[in-house]
Amino acid sequence: MNVVNLLERSAQAHPHKVAFADSAQSLTYTEVWQTAQHIASALLELSRTPNQPVAVLIDRNVQSICAFMGIALSRNFYVPIDQTQPPERIASILGQIRPQALVAMGELPQGLEVPEWLPILQYAELAEAPIDDEAIARVRTGCLDIDPCYAICTSGSTGVPKAVLVSHRSVLDFIPVFVDTFGFAQDEVFGNQAPFDFDVSVKDIYSTLYCGATMYIIPRKCFSMPKLLVRTLDEQRITTLVWAVSAVCIVATVNGFKHGAPKSIRNVLFSGEVMPIKLLNVWRAALPNATFVNLYGPTEITCNCMYYVLDREFELTERLPLGTTFANEEVLVLDEHDRPIEPGQTGEICVTGTCLALGYYRNPQRTAEVFVQNPLNDAYPQLMYRTGDLAELSEDGNYYFAARKDFQIKHMGHRIELEEIEAHMGAVEGVARACCLFDEQRNKIVGCYVGEANKVQIINELKRVVPKYMIPNIFVQLDQMPLTKNGKIDRKQLRATYEQGRR
Image (tube, rainbow, N blue to C red):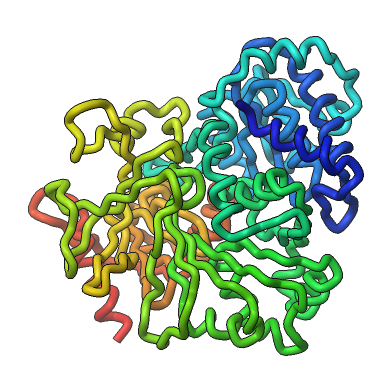
């Protein structure tokens, strides 16, 4: 009924085995389970109202995961927020979700102004709170698998992040299928790369709990020091990597295997963007005996809905197929008239099944726009999620990712609404109007604007309100924006102007 059941089961089966570890400490299954009970007891003392958001200022440490487990055990849902984000963005998220409490790992980020109504709970105190067995038992009897488990905040077109709310049922349905599909076992050691506010990490955390395996949280600095990364993977005996494409690419780009490849890795799974074949081949050459898997799926369908196990070599000009649908999920690729596409056509990827998120927290309008009735079924209610991703059906019967339907992009493994960047650019003094493009070929965000502001001014302002991966890589200053006859920015003309300038 609740993801904490996975932790409890593994704590009973493997009480002294290391469950989660980082560069500073490691915790056994028993220690994680006990800490979760301390935290849950403290939260239940604060409030007995279930299914409330509890925000966690996360870091790359085992304490963050313990906080998640304690929140879930109290029958509330956790909202991970990277504490290195700009204070204004953190405040925006808090204002939108209005959490029951904010869990901090120590001092708050400099410049963060927390609303007076929001209780701030220190992790160290929560982890030492008296355990209330009766309160925990009482709340667990009421748990439903449709209770929300977590909310992950993604970029929003209005400048306010959207909180994707996922239920326990969706996690408990997907993880066993994910584990069984790739044959993960108790001896697995997952090398966690993805931040905990990125849904790639959901697969690491809950696959570990389901298998009774171990997860090691790789320090950030390793990804800028290839020799240290390889040594860390070897020392921790990492067997499985479930990484964002951007992280895989970084290692290949900086010649990370120059001093040798890690010896224990047997699985490399990647997702988030289209994987460049040239960089993928670097990994395949370094790890010839490993299994490589291309994963596809947005946060709104609980991680992934399709996978492709690489079974051959690919030419540099080829694309990786999206592959097979995971069990208990259905993928529909529909044209503009909501009809299944034929070979040679392109359509929107839509998904149905238990995997679907509950929707966007406190955002019914946006939820209703993309979580809709399956147009192919008029006999009974059946929810379908429109991903906004376009896929092409090839003559060989495979689907291939084509593009985004709207202005949302995938950049450095993150889903970004270009309109959010535009909203913040437009707020910069000296910027009259802004419009962003994505240069797929160069994998760069292009910020076009009208006004007297310079590049440095805009970057400095954006640093305060958006993560680094959302700051444009290229800036284009214009005398005026090209407009359509309706007075809207003519994005096609703007792109043509930009591409002409590149030549």
